[in-house]
Image (cartoon, rainbow over all chains, first blue to last red; front, side, top):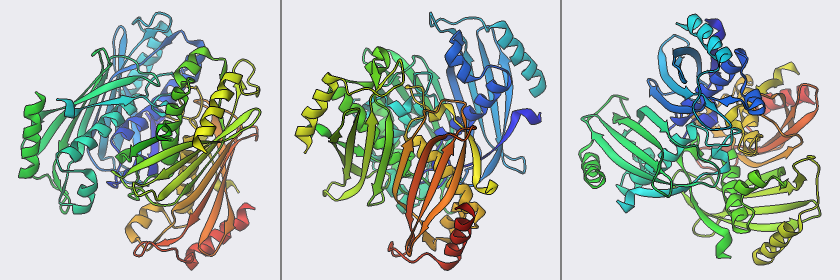
Length: 139
Length: 139
Length: 139
Length: 139
């Protein structure tokens, strides 16, 4: 799935005085990929903020750290749609070095909410369809 | 445990264009608390980097998001020692608003490694003792 | 001017793999102080975003770096109102170690704009008065 | 100078609750470009940290903000070598939208120091030569 994979080079500001990636920044790297994913499936964040019909906040996130990353390291991030529920969906970000060795994993769980009421709503159909399409491509 | 609780006021740079805390920054807030904790028990990061006998990298982290946080919100962060293993330990950060309502939780799993070899080692005894002391106070 | 001085302890995520404060983070530290300042004079950012009558974007910022800062270093940040113009104002943030030695300086220039039109407007009178009051206290 | 220009798409974590780029993050964007520049001229940060012969800390930085940037905006960043002194050099980062309109500028002043003594040293000759070569290409 070339289209859901991107390369990322670790920046100095991603690291800390321990000399390696600061743990919270693995979540930032994953979110950069998520933003590209949303743009790809026609639900770019920028438009979300304008249209304001629904939003998809993260309610749970987790990460594993397999290898320390240093400034200048280039990794590949592969996004896959893991689960599509009624009012939620889960994404996985597999980070690997250029030899294909896992350096880390991020997983996020999102719920869809109505921006007027702040309540959970079912995944809007066009959004759900796009997720399903991507799920097929990524599993 | 007054000593393991701290207040934190959400800064503008913790938020994003959705108007609320950017999810990765909840991990930053937890780490700020962790740094205070290490200083308190006599294992400040600053000295870790100088002494370089062992380090305690994070191998797993997860967070739940219960309430959106906005700039200027003041929350309380309570750190507790959840688990002390042979070569690892787990910490929990309970974030609550000033009415005591949970706004989020962070959990981190750390392993102790020898900085020369990069291999896992048993928790050094003085460090283990400090963790156990804190565990008693926080559960 | 005790009220416009605050202490700040450098966090791990403020540093990078060079072992010291990442330069952009000196601007973050200054902004943290600015947010406290706005709250103090009754123009907290949080309310700005709700009331939406005017905003005060930064049009210029600069910093000098006098001493490298490491994780765990505690510094004092002193904010002063440097200049009050017709449609702009300037703030200065003097950062010093606990011996009073300068570690760095940040300066920011803000303009006041109407949020409806996006055009520059004169400093609203109540805001200008507060700035003048603080300017007297800080020079 | 195609080689010293790069595109950058504003990420959600670059923005804040005001809906636009947080001012300090313009400095982060510039530094990302700087890291590419150093790699290009054969002085990648990664090797700097290993070789540890000299470093080039930033002693002054400034930015102008011409247009607000929102999540998803793609800009071009053009780096130019502005000045080469005896113990210092200056770089400029011109940020423009895709119509060529300036959205902001960053400038940084670096000094070369010996990592053993922490004292300023003359720009090492091979580094100086590379800067001069780039200066010719970028002015």
